[in-house]
Image (cartoon, rainbow, N blue to C red):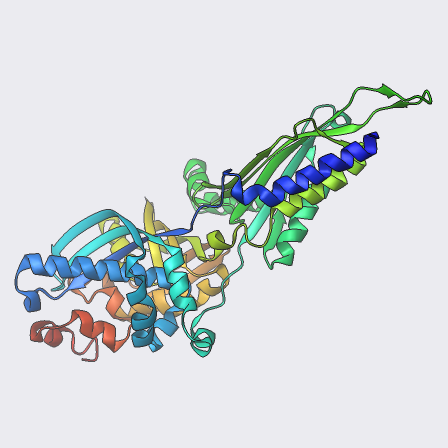
Length: 450
């Protein structure tokens, strides 16, 4: 068999291998889960017994966790406007979606009059997505929100005789993968561009007074998923043909590819491929072109769809002008009560009253401005007074909120005021689920329009 025919055979075997990949038992894309922190409420005046109130608040926290996860597929405003529909057709059918409860905090009866329970839960995305898909076509048109496309960064390298054993960017491979991903509607940037933007974000935080160590910890790459890998080529031994001509081919010896979630550092896809005896090519250019195409084929439309269907986004949220550190830390609970906010990490309280939070919310980056103005600030200003909070600066994933009236943020109002989850973008049906006694109705009748 001729050398070129032998090379073609190996290429065919390679293609067959890739087609059979899902059934080989090699690493697959992991089922998508969503980590959600949620606050459950119960009316202790209605349930009388504290044990019953706790049980109801815990059930409510689980429902709120599901509702927040549903918010990754259905807009917050639509949940409010179609609360009964979403509750009956989506939320109620997704109750088995909680994979496990990671943490439970029993807050007991708080000064605001409610029994509080906070949980952190891991929620399976598939049951929620299936429940949303089960809606009629017209319901889906009005209910399923536009999902923000994830951004991929691609950085594959090649090691070959022509590179003298050094890693050099495989431009053909990167272009082929980028073309495949873009054809499915995904956004793609180079790994170099992702790193450049990362350093720019770190500089912004350094200019705001954070240390490099802290800035490096809290700033994420601008890409949601990074695809990295190495492709190895070598030359075969020279073979003298019958005609007296010496022939030397280029061999594909191995490749290693992985995709990393930059928000969790989790490896969500990995493949190591080593042909039994190498795939042969006439020269390195031919090898790079063919290998680039084959590597690109690995990234099909389906390989990431279950993972990236949930659109969430991380931002650095800074409150400027908080009265003191203790009140600043308590703002975490206020944020967690808001439906669009999935998780909150308190990072730092800086000199001058700047409080830094890392916030994960349900939605794409493009939707964040609407969520920030129409939900987060609306809820906080409804509780603490008109224009107490306003946007001072918004750059990429870094947002500064100005506290215009620090004296309005008191421990009394923070602890005894109405929970933030009940004051903005909330349906009357939701309020009636938790405000059941005349005592709480009287206390909040003006605030909640009871």
